[in-house]
Image (cartoon, rainbow, N blue to C red):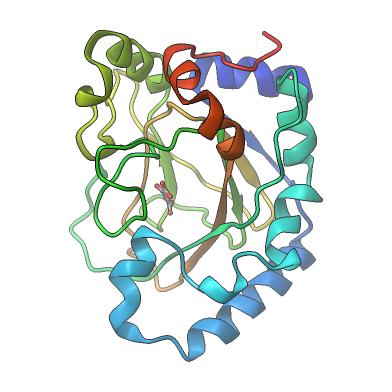
Length: 240
Ligand SMILES: O=C(O)CCC(=O)C(=O)O
């Protein structure tokens, strides 16, 4: 997808999929690091890691952060904005292990609100500009732990914020929208860039294989300073 199409797709749908954002070799090598880390994982920590990140010791390593900084994701994001946002200091290592059915669609959320075990303090928010996901394993069928997006909900969530403020998003819950959710099918090395306000969620994984992805929250540093503007202005910082 060229840079103009990335911009048009995010404006219209709230997301753009970038095929081959990193090489399959790099994806495989990072997957190997993750496998080594989780081999000794304390199984009691699953619920905490689901809400935060697996492999805490790997999150800020160059192998993880370069998934964003050395990929077309960084140049694509820079092209959308009037400024180059700070590079992320760490990634969220998001694994989805085999689960048992029944098949069901997840409820969407937006990030930056306190819920479950995440680290956001009660009564505060932590908005940013883009959620960028890099897929490290092939997910070629639905209900295989797919990252799932709810198209165009970035516009609905923004409208809701203007009408209801933060109270409209208990636990970060998102609007569902009228377009059916899309379970993203991706190969290792593909990536997705989502608008901050886009509703998203992980789908159940009924396959035998673990889903590996790393997510970056871009514009988080800028978000700390411009929190109110990011919430009020759907295109904050955009070249438009
Ligand atoms: O793991 C996934 O596919 C979704 C992750 C997610 O929803 C999030 O980190 O906010």
